[in-house]
Amino acid sequence: MSLHGRDLVSIRDLSRDEVLSVLDSARKMVPLAEGSRSSDALRGRIVAMAFFEPSTRTRLSFESAVQRLGGRCLTIADAGATSMRKGESLYDTIRMLSSYADAIVIRHPNEGAARLAARASERPVINAGDGAGQHPTQTLLDLATIQEAFGTLTGLKIVLLGDLKYGRTVHSLAYALAEFGSEVILTAPPGLRLPEDHREELRRLGARLSEQSDLRKAVREADVLYVTRIQKERFSDEDEYHAVAGSYRVDAALLEDAKPRMIVMHPLPRAGEIAPDVDGTKHAAYFRQSFLAVPVRMALLTAILGAARRGN
Ligand code: NCD
Image (cartoon, rainbow, N blue to C red):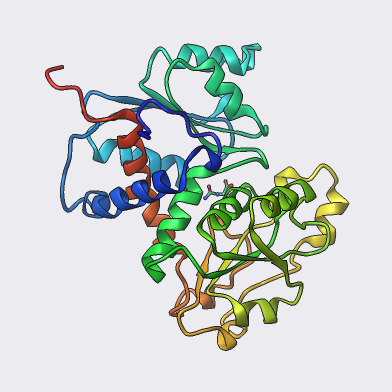
């Protein structure tokens, strides 16, 4: 099925073939993302960035993707500067915005906000992170990174390390990995384990899921070590945060036992979970991962918005 005109709220909105087709088209867009070729695939199109939570990579890579394809952006980067300060609802804000743009990219602190926005909007809505919910476009670029490194998304062992309770990137990624038949190994401090409803649902979908609380053992097994930041902003209780803060750290010494081709990924920003001495190792893939955000988001936007309208 075509992605044209569709919303992307959860990674589960996309079939396996649709994911593969976005990744295929993203590979072809790498020279465009690097600026070595140009395109006007989104000429005449306006994409609204509705960001109600901090963002660097996600918003700027979406903006770069739109602009490199000849489109334009309308950006809300600070909710405090909008009429939501005057009490306007999210529903009304999005409804109005959808009459100014051809698609809306939304990030919001509340889980479910992107689903609500999709109902309010007359144009396609792309979820760029809803609280501890989902972050499907991050998953697409994570998959692109894995596929580029291994040539496949199947039969790999992926360790998800860190805040598996509040981390939306892992909530989306785990489903995609299950769908592609890779094994997911969960390594989280007590208190930050993947919530039971996700585990149950993943098992129901046939996911190969296990837990490994010993980080050294997990690293030895891994093809991919996917590290996440503790999502400090999601804790309702400061003691709960302090009980887990600094409880894991990946450094070059830890990687000495890793498989030679193992890659370390991180959606970024990092906040101490990956020591800078990992950057110079052959395992570090997180900066490549953050670059791939641009071609992947180009591919997605092109699929959702279709080719540029001619003659206007
Ligand atoms: C992530 C997010 O916002 O969920 N960042 C990103 O989009 N690259 C991860 C995080 O903030 O820890």
